[in-house]
Length: 282
Length: 282
Image (cartoon, rainbow over all chains, first blue to last red; front, side, top):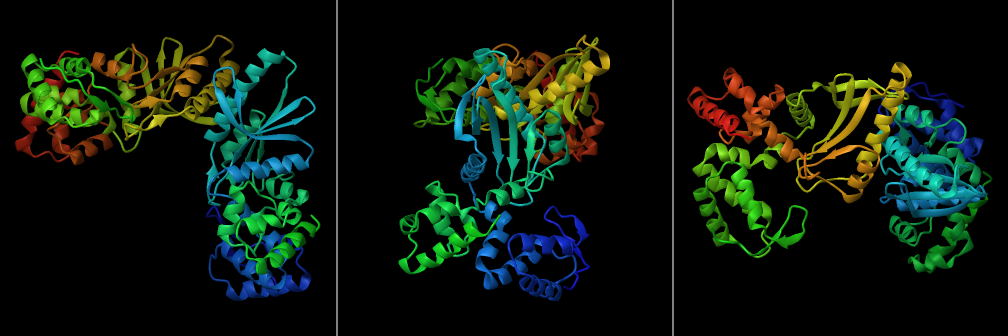
């Protein structure tokens, strides 16, 4: 395969050498064949311009993938698909809830928890045995939005307030195992440093190296409905409003498509894509 | 004096009975004579319309005051003057710093303090003896903006992080006396509840009943330059950029006016107003 040796602009504005390996790895991970990858690399090289955004490289790759291998394209646009869970943060909370369920936790989404001082709305409260995990989800529609240090600072106070209330109620054996802060974009450096230092589990798109959001999604195989290239934006929004966030839910209930106005003629195509995405081994 | 018995709309949108006493009290506090107050009340009654904003009543009162008693008008528009310290939050921080200095504290504004986990920018660090006060200033240009619970939550974590670092460095005798959170608008109910519960001193325009921001300013007599009706908005902004926030500084240094382009002919008028505002007993 041909190599691309150029400078590209990352989502955060940094100018870096383009990583041939990363593009190949991500295409392979999504299930693209070697032939498809070779075609994509050659096309990207041809269309390259100085300091091109990695986002634009992704667009070229995606539009080719979409024509060649539809279910693979759906998986490849994962990061973008997560952004499309917006504009509100609720579908993302629900989506994170589903991922935790898949890992064997009992999950409640968007519940009010009484702290020692005030009540707090916690995005996801998960439970395994008598251990509780509180998960705050910071969703951003814009991939460039950074989650700054103020977020883990206020989340930590919130968790401390709840922990104090629980200790009073249940005694010193801590019911509260761990606080998580999950974002679909990235943390600022001091956000990661502070959160890690006070014992929050910090999860962003690509942090930490093991167990980051991308990996959590890929290993669960729970792809969001926004991955589907055969649905319109409006149809996806209607599904999200019904709290349907997973491709799996479509696979299990074709009726949902009719409910959000997908024409009968198009239904089979959507079902085919959804099933293929769910079947691509994680 | 005539009474006004009508419903009015407060800055936060609440519909309440108009308080005759409050208007009279605020006008008296600013130094308005009984005659002036009577004229203002009669004019407000004449121009009243259903569910009128208190802001509009204030406008009528202010425009009359301005014509009748200039220095009094300058003091009366105090809340608005504080809002005009924007758009950035820096002049407000500096202003709060001046008020604390006036109360006998040593003050440093906008400094970086190393916490246990990360470095923090603290708006005002004040000192009296070996006791330290950390003050966070939340400035809002819009009087309707509320300071929500997330703010005292993150401020509390920030202070805890700094306290832990200080304990490590100086031992257990706490150097850190108290954290303050000062806003020029208002706190939400749970913000006040949480902040008070964790031991933050919460100060807003009219909270607590004793020692609120309005009172802190009035008892210090340190009126901001934005009170001056004889300066243009542009001239005020130029002064703020030079870190000049107090009328007192103008009284002590007429040269400042020339530096921000006040024409020679207008200087005496500004000096007269500034001096009168500083002289009106708090």
